[in-house]
Image (cartoon, rainbow, N blue to C red; front, top):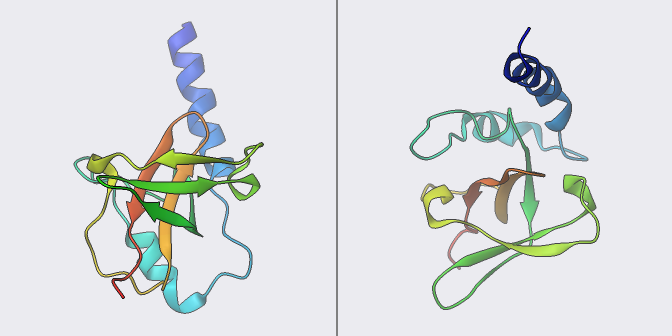
Length: 115
């Protein structure tokens, strides 16, 4: 088996281990989280990354999310949400939502509801 094939197999088998439900998930939002799709690709956001309610801040032109131990990283840091990964959809979660995978970065970002 080639190196590329072995690496792909390892990545595929590890993918479910990366995606973990948040603590105290809200069952009423399960379908909404499961329905999040990567812009352009259409792949599910939450199957390859952890999707969480996050602290977010908007600068002059872009959003940033707070990435911490809940995503399996330390020390915590602010990560830019690429404009191509921002989903402009209704957000019933009440907070910003980010799907993030270490090594891949922001897979999807849903801004908080407008106040």
